[in-house]
Amino acid sequence: MARVVGPQGAKPLGLPGRVSNEIVSGAHGDSLSCTLRLVEIPVPAPGEPQRGRHCHDGHAECMYVLSGAGTTSCGDKLHPLVAGDTIIVPPGEMHVTRNTGSVPLVMLCFFPTAAIDMRLEDAVS
Picture 1 (tube, helix red, strand yellow):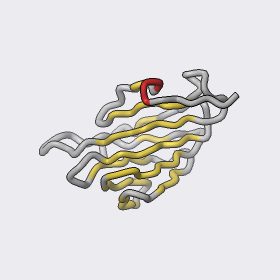
Picture 2 (tube, one colour):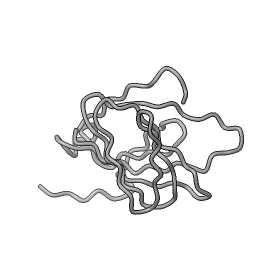
Picture 3 (cartoon, helix red, strand yellow):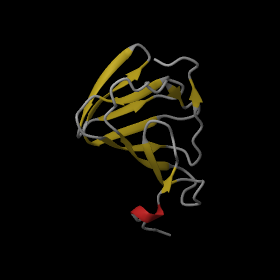
């Protein structure tokens, strides 16, 4: 049965360095096959430590930039991103997205799984 999820239905995840609200997922009982998050990465403060990279071993991550500008570091490549861009990160590829603009970087992040697995890299990049 179709269902509408409003902003009040999103679950704040409390992930470091960003505001991440899970809109749809298996954890909510909304979906058996996908997860959708609204993520906001603030403009970094001077001297603020950078988040390290992470990966999702069992599934890809697809990020669509709603507003702002940033970069996603994947493997040894740096991909600039602006509003309207989409980046797809394959399963198991270490990555991190950072804000490079003067306003928050806002993205929709889609995962083709109802349960997200995440593995952190040991060192900050």
